[in-house]
Image 1: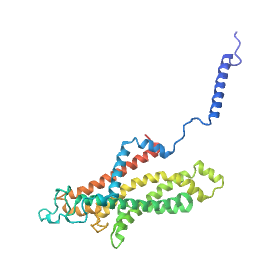
Image 2: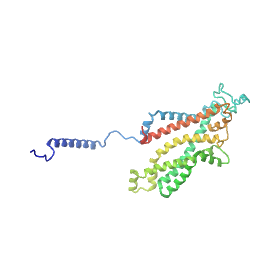
Image 3: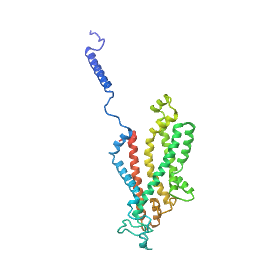
Image 4: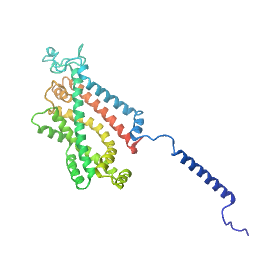
Length: 328
């Protein structure tokens, strides 16, 4: 009878020993090199930009937004005519209240004989002001409430979130209409205030959620263990690392703000002074002539749609690039 083996063979021991020697040499090499890779790490925003610059959807949105911003900022110099001058008023007649396209006026004029192209270009500046200022107002209020709720917690968090829940339960456009109607005299600033206020709960809830996720992260726990005071932890560690989703949301809110501003102006709650054209205001004036001259309403509507589309494409692409779950 053959004797049972009492342990591994000498060949197996030699193989294990060789593998152990290779592992030791590899560990020594890594220890001398100081890292697993000689390449430097990249930040989240830099990694996102590397994907975004190859994303055609983001590039299309960025191009639309860039053209819109450039036209808005240079509108007072590139308008071919004074947008408030009634240059074609003598060409109006009862049978033709809207002068059509002609040399020097490629899009014709409105019902007051003012150049349509010049008014569209000048209106881009007012639309940009309303959208940006309203978004900044909503972002500022949301940052304040979100920081209180996510940074302090407890009864402060519960109280702030109940206020936010009440505001979110009301349809945004209805609340904006109600806020704008509270002012005795409609103006551009009433539109900005109304749109900014309805955006505050959106930013507040988003920032609060991001800060709650940061509360149990390693760097926050380490700061607490070292005895760092709560305000320093909130403003130096939690808040800066929670702003990414808020910035992305601000890009998307710009598109919504432009559409809401146009809706309020269309309803007559915007700036009544038509010497300062705004796309929603132009759309509201054109509804009287929509059956006979639809182009007067189509031009500002197309501008609103294209600009809102540009901000939406850019914001959605930025959200996908920054979200690890949806990276392509």
